[in-house]
Length: 133
Image 1 (cartoon, rainbow, N blue to C red):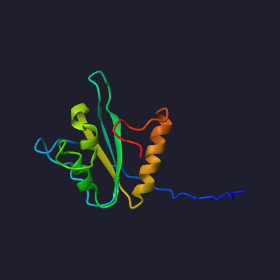
Image 2 (cartoon, rainbow, N blue to C red; image 1 turned 180 degrees about the horizontal axis):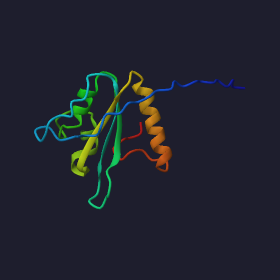
Image 3 (spheres, one colour; image 1 turned 90 degrees about the vertical axis):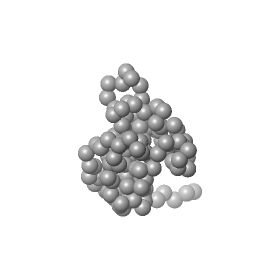
């Protein structure tokens, strides 16, 4: 018979910055995220009838938020294996497109908790541009 194991997850406090505009490269300035590990969220409208922007992506960076968020500003085909290439983000996202982040060295755990919380609040579905895997 398997032996149960109790795991005590750490308590993490995330201090989010204000939402910043996220524009494609050559169409606006980068949001100036820090070069520290952390988690981030992208929100936008997906249809013209949407009243409010919704969170469409939750991500993390173990090395630096600045580079990871800047990858999202790239058009399809310019950077391999990122959200923009996998989901044609810029073809579906509608203004305003915004990003916010929180610095944490526990980015893996924080991202997992944010995704689980999102699923709990949205009938077990992930944000529009997150994929399972």
